[in-house]
Length: 461
Image (cartoon, rainbow, N blue to C red; front, side):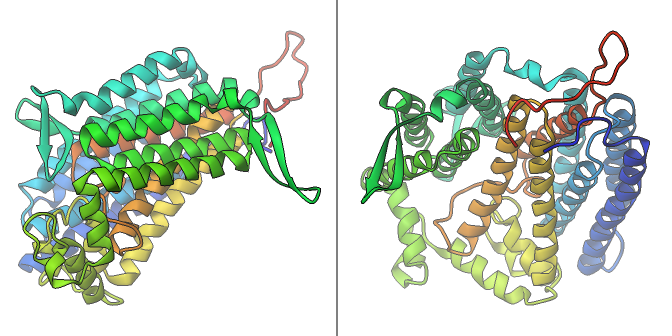
């Protein structure tokens, strides 16, 4: 059960400031090390990179002291450290600091501004649940926007991008956050009804399964159809898989019914089998997963397995301590700074560096779940939990695909992959977590007589 009351004070922001110094030191060291390995000198752009990243971190730190003094002191430093490592890897793989790395730095500044906007505009997290169906419609529009023939752009076999003023934007990154807000609002109101069991299956008097009521299967069916619609319209296997997985996890969190998980897995299996039978790009992904080292599959003209195989060799080349940027194999791998950024980190920094980065990602997800546990309101708890599941599933899909645990799908890693849409969406998520954690540790409202009152949790812990 969360501890109602202040919980945190000025000491939290002091601890955050000290952690921010360490995070900025790690980021600056990573950029300097990349320059030394590539050119034998510290990059001339290091002051610019340190200034923009440090300035954004300092601005957010000062803003938190004013508008959210009881927010989690670990979230911001971890996000800054991951963002800084991502900048160093992108610049090191590019071999220069005025191309993709400079653009990523600009997206970093916009991401920090988006985080600040969330902190300023979302003073009470519960207000986000006022218009759930409008949020659902907005999420659907954002997901299907790339399907439009005028603005939609198809790249690398998937239609996930929208061209705006010479730049490409991936609306699905923002749609994920909007849809999770909708799911949290919907499940906070309907969770109790969905938790009611309709019929129990027993074997010799022992309950083995609780079936939900038939009229409650509507949300599950709609979510399943929605995921299939995304797969058909955009050919984006990763996003459709991620959305359905997050919905299933949030549904279980709201109802604590294992039957929903079983039904969802059965529906997912049926949908996956149908997608494999109908869509050639799904068949190609599965073929690459199962027969990556087959020469015929490796040298296929369309959708060969060379990206996966080269990534596996790059990971093996990194060993325990890494190869550095000087002779990294991953510099020649397609999407080494986006979809396969964890492979690049594993080669350049070795297993030690990759493990450290994964620990930072794990810590970020853990703090998201901590915000969910501390939240006093059901909606805020489900929202923080859903966003934590989102980050966790993203890392699992990326790393699982790179290591052939599951088929490879094009998906970004939070704060590390090149691309503005993913980075800005990641900072928005951090802003929501900070606001939720601050609201959870505010002093409880006092009655008119200034007598202390006991806080009763709105849901069982």
